[in-house]
Image (cartoon, rainbow, N blue to C red):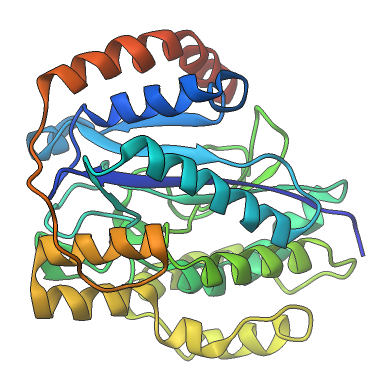
Length: 329
């Protein structure tokens, strides 16, 4: 099997208590200056755009791992990074890993779980991952709603601005699977963030196994593009049966994790208890592994935290953000 390396970027909303604000930058500042060598280049802040701005300027924050040969060490790494973020946020906010906030209708205000895959056989690995991509999407599908109404499995996959159908140019940035111009890795961009590290571990192992193959899977870009919206809306569809049968010969894709998604769990709880208790349950799961509501202390945006975040994180990070943007254009 071809040697493969993996890296992971995880985006998460810090809600106070129902939505993020610029105070999120202060938590990134606290995290970054606790270990600048590690966190300066491995954290990021994101903002809403255009017509979505009236629903809130601040979007998600990002943490990321180092490069790993082993999927399990990769997941152990992101677990450590989560712990550091938890300590930086403390009790000031709820950590909400969702592809899209349930009450919003904001395609530019979304969050992702992005795998970077390094391999010497990049063209084959890209095609094989493209073939398995609908299954990977369901393993992580976690944005079930828009404007408080059920959308399906992944509003972000269907309407998010930073993903989209695959084109003939794999280096074009805003599509579900790309070749990164800056890093030279294959970037799996499609996935929603999920609190459940069991799902992340299954994803990491499956991505490694598929990318390591020395045989070609029957990838068809147009067939993928034709089904991606249906998967985002409906979840498991009959068209996935032959894909699952084929890739299960090479990698573990537990059927129950795709027919019953993280989005299903989140929507069921939201329908039962409402918005803030659902966010409290996701936060509880992100911190402790227990997906159940917990009491939420009073929270409110702080102007001083916002100012501290701009001064302590955004301004020092701006030169790196600019360089990164130019490299990825």
